[in-house]
Image (cartoon, rainbow, N blue to C red; front, side):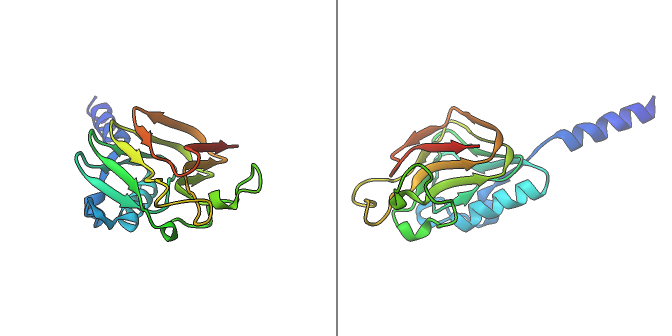
Length: 174
């Protein structure tokens, strides 16, 4: 009987996913400081630890370039949180695949990317703002997509607001 209770307790602790605040990884969340590295480190750590939630806190504006979602990670935007794309095209990486639809090299970059990732999600009542205003991006400078997922499975998106993409809002390709 005691062994069964101990086993149940151990199981309940191992099932509980951990939360990872981006502030624990050095993010400022002031809308001015580029927080890409901190957000990515939180995602990488979360995935390496077996999964959980990467928290974008309520009321904060988190400025990023390209981030890469990974297995078993929930990118969670709390109510009022804004994950905003940098207005600088140089903050978007080139390794998010060449556009496969037609010759549109100006859309070869993206804000949120995943390739061969599984069991991940983007959730919460916050906003992902691509900051894709014409003063920031055009066909000459490049126009990053908001979200691009390649060869991924078990993806969930729930309640999050997607605004101001510089190009397509999303592209999911298997």
